[in-house]
Length: 148
Length: 134
Image (cartoon, rainbow over all chains, first blue to last red; front, side):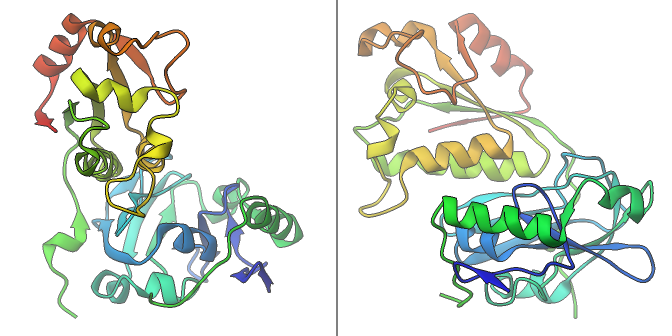
């Protein structure tokens, strides 16, 4: 599913600005990644650093930092969570976030209040699709998943 | 796969003050402070950029929109907005404004957090863990 060439997965969960996606895993952890929209805005990503596993991150405290040639900033975090694991492939080869944003996850986290409670704050399904497509069209974003 | 320490963040947050004196006459110096400030803020540090001397002109309405650090590069206003989104606070030096005919109540971009006296900058410096100057 795409809008303006920006890939979208309705089964995932998204923040209201569609910067990050979350996926619930069988063990109740949450996998966090960047959306196609976000990686396009960032440009070619050259460095990623994740908070050390075991670190608790309250809402507003980033899970990771990202640097591209033209942008630097946080991978935002909206939930009270503990870092479980970082994706070593992405840490070693950050451009995977550009070329395959929905498979190149950044971190797995454990929500302090459980996955169900955490995900209530996120958008999914048709509601998320409407918001995602509205943003890419409103801001005239055309996604590219090349390694540029 | 062996992960090096640099891949993981475990720093304690510090207070960082960036003094920005460069302005439109030196555009090549006007993106890095915001980029570095964004990285520092994303790493849980409390980051404040204090604009003084010609640096105040970057906070003047319409100036940063028309500037880039390199030809054809990203506009400085976008670097400023990235820094704000990362949590960087922007302070403007009140005593520097008259020299550039900038009226603080009408001529500054909305991204500015505070207009401060020199004594308030002095307080920020004395309370900071790290100070950088551009």
